[in-house]
Every structure is written in structure tokens, then in C-alpha cells.
Amino acid sequence: MLDIKFIRENPDIVRKDLKKRKDEEKLKMLDDLLKKDEKYRKLLVEEQELRHKRNEITSKINEAKKQGKDIKPLLEEAKEIPKKIEEAQKNTEKIKQKIDFYLMRIPNILHESVPYGKDEGENATINEIGDIKEPSFELKPHGEVAIGIDGADFRQAAKVSGAGFYYLKGHLAMMNQALMHFTIQNLAKKGWELIEPPIMLGRKAYEGVTDLADFEDVMYKIEGEDLYLIATSEHPICSLHLDQVFDENEIPKRYMGFSPCFRKEIGSRGVDTKGLYRLHQFYKIEQFVFCKPEDSWKIHEELLKNAEEIFQLLKLPYRIINICTGDIGIVAAKKYDIEVWLPRQKKYGEVVSCSNCTTYQAVRSNIRYHKGEERDYVHTLNSTAIATSRALVAILETYQNEDGSVTVPEVLRPYMGGMDKIEAVKK
Image 1 (cartoon, rainbow, N blue to C red):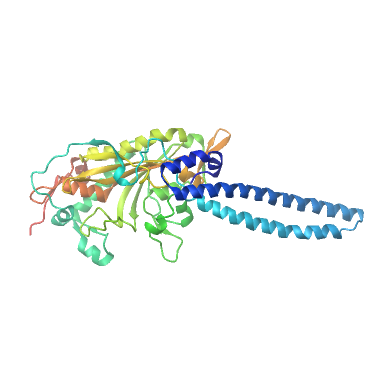
Image 2: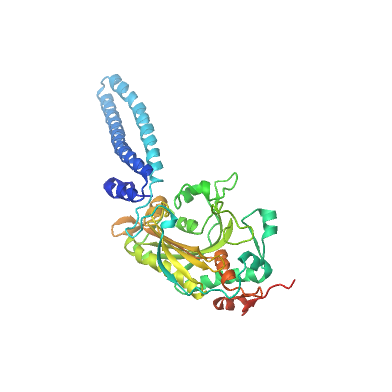
């Protein structure tokens, strides 16, 4: 969230940003927040004055006792003060709760390069990389190809777990593992530290990293527990330094998180019951960085380049998208997507999301660093390195052969025992 001090000192910046987003509801929130913040600070002063008055009367009572004076009037006056303090505390707490409600919902300040747009249809294409070749035969849906090489069982998964789940088998399961190992080693060479995080988080930690709407729309709640299955390793990695203060020379911290991911909401277009694109469960390697504010925009581009390199090495054509104001959500100040070309569908599909969240998560999670004699909030950034199921979709569409076999991308062969092709199962 935004620091209340920042909002208090820069209301015009926040207001201008909300106007850019065309968010009338949040503009009303901002106006009421500023009024309540002013009232809250006045009430705190009144509460402090009451406490000071109580201390003064206590001193006067003690002095009067020493001098043998009548202390009854002072006792009567002192008797009323605790009630007034209690009432003041109730009033300040009530207003503080409303202030916190607003702070958790007012979005981050957008970077000036974020394009204006009403929805995802107005996202801006920055670049297209790779040659898109017309296939020489009619391509099959990736789910059919996966079944044809005996690499997946969607029907049994739907029977035992429901739509949006899958069994990966044999060589396709090996390819899934190969994608993970290839990506991890690629980032490890650049000095990134591998993290296997908890796959469940408590609500307090989760509130520090995501839009509150995700609790209803995206995340699975563990019944009877204050725990949620993680939607991405970004979230527990941010929580790794909850309430901590870095030494200035400790950052930037570059982590790569490996985890299964669980998502309740998987898109308005529903689930392809014989596919790997929209799923309730999948594996992902995530990049996550804690850094100084002055370094974050350079690092944002670094994260994007790392993700690009993965798809370049896989020889999968892709494009880079700058997400517009109407599609960016409340946490990121700027977000890129990478969309890979899906030749059978003849369209691009999202495979990477790359965000600079500036101080938004750090304020919520209370993560700071020593800045000389002072302390300041870090910037946090995150980006998919690879979501393996979506990479498999692109590989199964791009590398399928007319006989039903699938050529193994060259860069993955060392992780699959040198295998260069997965043959179709003879019927």
C-alpha cells in the first residue's frame, strides 16, 4: 500500500494517478481518507493531552497528600479522565480501522510510461521477437498431442480432482522437469539464489503482498486454518523478510522461487479439460528482488531480459506487452507481459508477468533498509521466469511433427538424457 505520510504530503500526485486510472470510487476513498487522517491526528493529540492531564493530577494529589490538603476535588476530577481516555481510544481506533481499509485498497502510483487504456485490449505491444513460420501440415491441439505421446491423462484427472487438473506422464513429465532445471541453472549462473518456499501462508503475511480481492477470487483457503495455498512463490518470498530491516549493503537480493502454484480462478473463458493452459495447479520459477528505490527500474528491465532469454533459447517466438492502466491492477507501478506465439491457435498467449511494485508491498509488509542514519522502504519486483505448463503448450504446438511425435527443443536435451524426440504411441 501507499505510505500514509506520502499520501498526506502528496495528495495531488495520488489524485492525478487515480484520474489516469479513471477510478472514481477510489477518488472518493482518497478524499475521505484525507479527512479521516486529519481527524485521527487531532484525536491522537487530544488523547495525549488527556494522558498528560492525568499525570498532572496524579502529581497534584501526591503533593496535596504530603501537605495534608483536601484531595477530594482532585480525586473527583481524576475519576473522569480514564473514561475520557477510553472513549478517545475507541474513537481513534474506529477511525484508524477505516483509514487502514482505504489504504489497503488505494492502488500504487503508476510509472509515467504506463499507457492509458480501458482494458486488456488496449495494452501496448513493444516488440515482437522470433520468426513466425507457417506450418506445413494441419496442427493438432496441444492436449491431443500430449495424449498421443502418452504424456498426459486429462480425463482421469478430471474424474478424481475436477476440471483444471492433469496427470503428466513419461517423457512429457520429464520435459516439464527439464524446463525447471534448465531455468534454475540459467538463473543460478547469474547469481540468483534458489528458494523453495512454504506452499501455504497465513492471512496476515498474504495481506502484505496481494490485492485483497485475491482472497475471494484466486486463492484456496485451508478449511479450519488461517492458511491459504500460494498462488505464486512471489508471495512467500516477499514474506521471507516480513518486518525486517536490511543493511544498505545487503541489497539488492535476487531470489528465484520454485513452487507449485494453486489458483481458484483460472479465466472467464473456462478450462480446456484436455489442456495445460488454464489450470488450478501448475509449477513456476519466479524471479523476486528486494532493492533500493534508485535501482528498481534498471532491475525491472533485467528481469524482463532474463525471461526473454528463456524463450529465445527455447526458440519460441514471442512479443512484449506494456500493460495499460485498465488492466494493471493495484499492486504494480508498471507491468510487462511476455506472450508466446501459439501456431495452431494462430495467436499469442501470456507466459510471463513482470512487475515493479515499488514500495507498495514493502509498506504493507514493513520491509525497509538502512539509508544512512534513516530507514526507508525497499522496492520489490517480481517476474515469471517460466510457468512450465504454458511453456509446454507452446512447445507441443510449435515442435509437433506430422506423425504425432514431438521434437525436444535442443536446449532441453541435456536434461532429458540426450533425447531429441518423443515418439507418438502406436495404436
